[in-house]
Length: 317
Image (cartoon, rainbow, N blue to C red; front, side, top):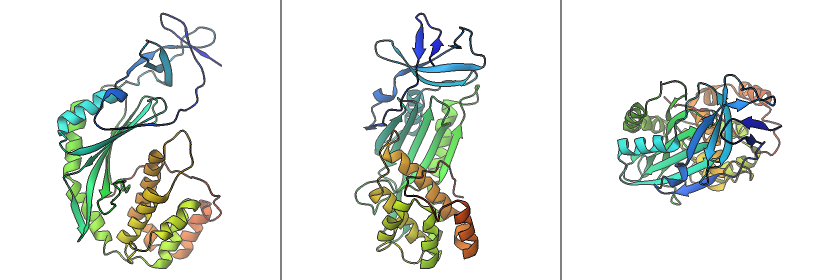
């Protein structure tokens, strides 16, 4: 069923298929600088729908492309405004930049790998911060700022996904301030040294092979043998070694099924779940029978070969 949009010309919104993600490299703002507008919506009888409005992308020829229906008090905060303020406030000098646009531009992720800064977790093993900024026009994501990390020993430059700091803001009222967002983002990045100490502790946290095999059941079936193949050269009987086997397998080996969501996005989501498991002591100290009961409850022991992707956020303290 189509829904009318009140504009100078009558426009109809039809059910749309999700397009594939678009990925861009570099600082260029053009891909995220398209105009976005809100319009009231009409029901089939021509009456305005209360407490709702439509969000539309404006094309180069002035055409409207439907993005989402949101609450009437939802405020549009443009991708380009957030990024411009962040880049001005943080004054990036030496960073590699990747931008992912999903759902016709409704969702943006922009990642900055800081190339001239690193922290040594243990001798010969360094990490650099990766700043990831997210925003959406469909209500699926609050404005968010995440600090991930790049393990420099990964020579092909792909991200080992280890999210550990974040902040987010909702699109309602006047509570979000771009200047405050940029200032808080800088403060989070300044804490990178402090948060890196969590991983330093993992370098001496023992993990038995039995426990490592047991916990791997929480992962998608196809990823498990890839983790096992990455144990050699990584797993040294510590949580850090096992963690790197996981992130290397996820980053370098795992190829999620094709779909509307890009492999990068799926890996980020699953990488967040990996971080949650490693940060929670229960997975590493609970009795085996309790882990088994939890796996059965979550149907992990009889899981089909699928691409189960988790959508949780975690902060490691």
